[in-house]
Length: 110
Length: 277
Image (tube, rainbow over all chains, first blue to last red; front, side):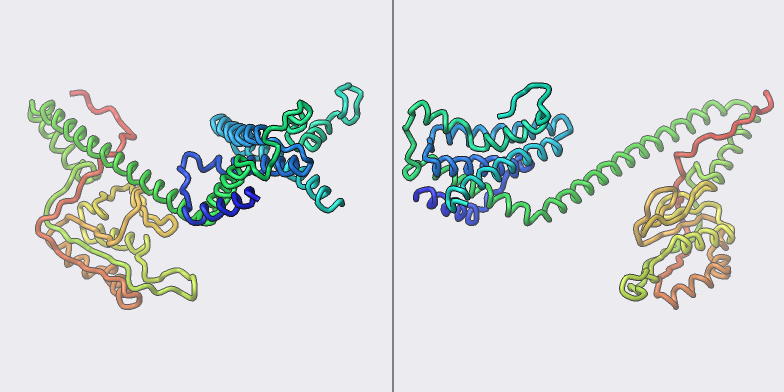
C-alpha cells in the first residue's frame, strides 16, 4: 500500500509545487515520463506474477529514463530528434500495452 | 521466439514479437530464477513507492507544462522581436559606417578636384547632381507634411480599416511635392530617389524596402513658394478629401530650415567614358 501512498504523494507534490523544468530539459521530459511509465507497468506486472524485485526495478527505472533521454538528446544533435522521439514512444507504448494486457489477464482472468 | 533463419517468412515480425514478449523486463524472471528474493516484497518496497511518486510528479509537471504552452509561444515571439531589433541595430550601424565612408569619398574627391578651374567646375557639377539624384543631403526652406491614421473605421467585422494611411496616400503627397517644385523629398527620414518604391506589404508601408511606422512625416526642400504651390495643387484637394471622409490627420507646416538626408546606398550602374582632359 506504500505504492499507492507514493502515487498520491507524487500527484500532490506535482500539483502543489508545480516544478518548472529548465528549458534545456523540456524536450526530454515527455520521453522520460513515458519511459518511467513503462518501468512502472513492467514492475506492476512482475509483482502480479510474484517475481517483483526492487533492485531490478530501480535499475530498469533509472536505466529506461536515462537511455530514453539520451537517445532523444543524440537524435537532437543529429537533427533527427523528432523521429527518434517517435521511435522511443512507439517502443515504450507497445511495451506498456503488452504489460497492461498481461496485468488485465491477471486481474480479470480474461 | 522466432528463429533468425533467412527462410523464416516471419523474420521481419520477430522484432515486434520480441518487443511484445519481452515487454516485462527479463531481469525480473532472471532474478527469480537465480533465487534472489531480496526486495521481492513490493508491499514494503520504498524504492517502488518513491519511483511511483517521482513518475507521478513528472507526469503532473509535464501535463501542466503542456497545458500552458502559451508562454512558450510568447517566448518565441519575444525571441523573434529581439532578433529583429538586433538585426535592425546592425543595419543602422552599417548605414552609419556607409555615411562616414561616403563623406570620406566626397572629401577625397574635393581634394583631388581642387586643382585647375575645369576640375573645380567638374566638382561643382558633381555636387549639384548629387543633390538632385539623392546621394547628398539637401538643406534649405521647405515644407513638412505629417499624416496620421484616423480613428479606426473598419468595414463590417473584419474588413479593412479605411482610416489607415495607405501607400497610395504617401505616393500622392510625394508626387504632389515634386509637382510643386520640391528638390528633395524624404519620408520618415528616408530620401526618395528615382529608384525608391513606395508600396505596401501586408499592413506595412515600405519605402525603399524599409517599413515605415506612423506618424508619417514627409519632408521636402524646395523653393520658397513650395508650400503655397503644394497647397494649391491637386494633391491638397485629395488630402482634404481623406481628412473629411476618414479623419486622417494631415498637417502641412512650412519650415525655414529643413534638412533632407542623402541616400548612401546608391550604386553606380552606368559609366561612360568622359572626354580626356
